[in-house]
Length: 156
Image (cartoon, rainbow, N blue to C red; front, side, top):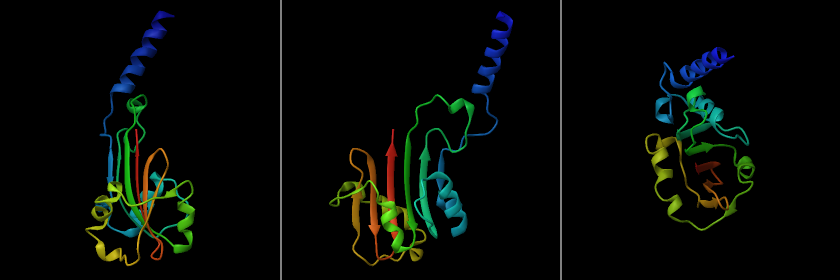
């Protein structure tokens, strides 16, 4: 019985400590060339409330984006920042659980940083609306007329 326990323990330790591939902790839309690639990648990582046709993102997950045994027990820190282009009729689907708020420092620089490289794909003319989720670090900047939503979500 002791040998079996020892063998199983050694195998578990080896599985948990060895990984031949590096854990990918950050996904950045600049690494994806087409809209279709960006949309498909983002859809795998977020909760989707409707279809969308374009996306830019900078996602960080301390556990990584591929399941590895050695990350199972580590605490997780996530910082997801993204912008999506969808039909204006679908905007309200993304606002469930959010309250309209006044602009604050939570909205200052990150939206512009997401679209700075491909700014021509993100024409924004209307006045933005600001939303937040109570008691959480989740913020949305909405250009309703254009069907553009910026979202920042930090979880510890």
